[in-house]
Image 1 (tube, rainbow, N blue to C red):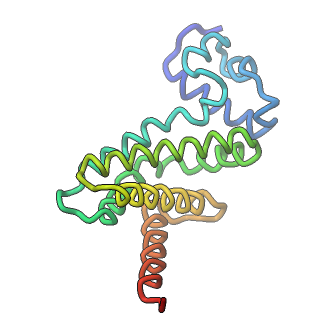
Image 2 (image 1 turned 30 degrees about the vertical axis):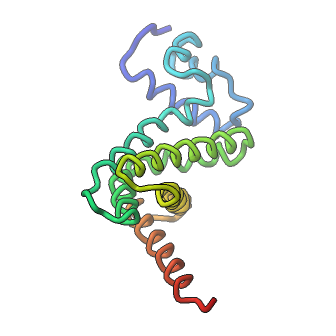
Length: 193
C-alpha cells in the first residue's frame, strides 16, 4: 500500500462519494474507501475524522467565504445589499463542484442522520453570518433576519442549481431566488392589513 502520495484527500473524497452512491452510505466502510485508492484505514483517518466528514469537510471554507464577503461589503450597505454581495461572492467557490454536489445531495437525501447533519451545518452558517452582520454594526433582529435570509436564499438556490437539467450558474440562480424573495417582501408591504 502507498503510504503517502499527493492528492490523497481528494482521492479519498472522490472514492468515498462514488462508493456511497453505488452501494449506499451505511453499507460503505472506511476500509473499502481507503482500499479503493490504495491507502490504509489509518491514512483515511489522517484526512477525515470519520466517513461522514468526507461529505462535510468543506463547510468551514464555505462559512469563511460567507463571513469574509459580509465583512468586505462596502460600509453603509443595506443588509439585503450585503446578502446579495455575499451570495454572489461565494457562488464562485462552488461553481465547479456541481457534479460533486449533485452526488453528495443524493447521498445525504437517502440518509436521515446525514440530513440532520446538513441542517446543523446550515444553522452554524446562519449563526456565523449573523455575527458577521453584528460586527458590521447591524443590530438584532436585523442581523439575524439578514443571516436567515442569506442562508435560506442560498439553500433554495443551491437545491435548484444541483437539480437535474439545471444549467444556470449558481450566481444566476441565487439572483433569481433573491429577486423572488424581494417580490414576496414587496407584496407583503403593499398588502391590505
